[in-house]
Length: 477
Image (cartoon, rainbow, N blue to C red; front, top):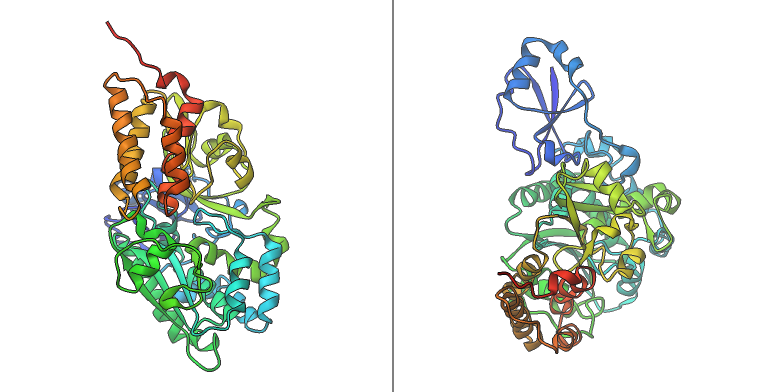
């Protein structure tokens, strides 16, 4: 009997599969119920007990209830049930590299126009229009040009980029090839968190297989394109785009002053296209199916889908993909399978996102609506906060994360994040908040060199706005 098994790091596969024909597949967004297997088109949690029952009685599968994997709401994860992350042939059979073959028959300006019409924005956090970066790098005359895919993902409780690479590394490679052809880049780098060992293994395997298939030779007529993996150090700041370039060049992870921007003065002082891996993976689907297909998901300003890391107070903590415009409540009910216990609120946008109260359950998950609350979509982290959590303790935990991860290059971030951590600890010890707290927050946000410091006060600011009672001194007898 054939069984497909989720082979990502979120699922353990240490079982006795004797008697089964085992095939690998990618993440199905059911991590909270994992390990997950597919038998006779049924998606089920697997363990030794279930496997033994099926071995003894194959008809036992018919008695099992299938979990839901909704392909209709997905783009990047749509074929995870049929693609073996380590076998390029399964990706090709699912339509892989058709977009690349189509792209190299197009004028680069046509590719850029198609991406512009799709409304694709950077999925790493800044949400910058993707076509503009392509356009700016293409217009540069300085050569050689580079492309860098960012998979540093050092945030707390953020796994979606890693799971994308573990599930379908070929889509990232194809997206890089299309982008490289468009801007005439001759070398690509994938910058990966060194802890993501399975993602690194599968990306390298995908690079080797795509190169052997001859796809790299088609990018440039004069010089064969190639991709190299670079591992990041254990530092959150290394994910900042210019700090990442410094690391690739063999230097310390210090952000650079901007301008100049990487599109003109990037890696080795050459024009460089930098995109998050999720952004790059979306490009093949836009080119192959057209911008109309992509814009059928979401709405103006937030077209397409977003991969999310849904964690905390839900029954199915998972990596998944949602179309923009679902409400937070719909995401929790349909993706998270409901709240596990009573709920207090949400951290939307990862550690540098906003802490929102339960009233925002009906908030539409898109760039504009989330930004109005003071939070952000960011890289896709959604942490569901249980009722019994102390919000001030939670904010202090996030602030300490920033203080620990600050590179120390600029004073506002290095000193400011430690000061805020100290202020919150003092408050928990019974001291009043300082009268100049707003000024401290403003100084850190406006004077810090990079996005780490600029966003660090956001959890505190939003928590004080939406949970004011938690920031009042409580006198206990």
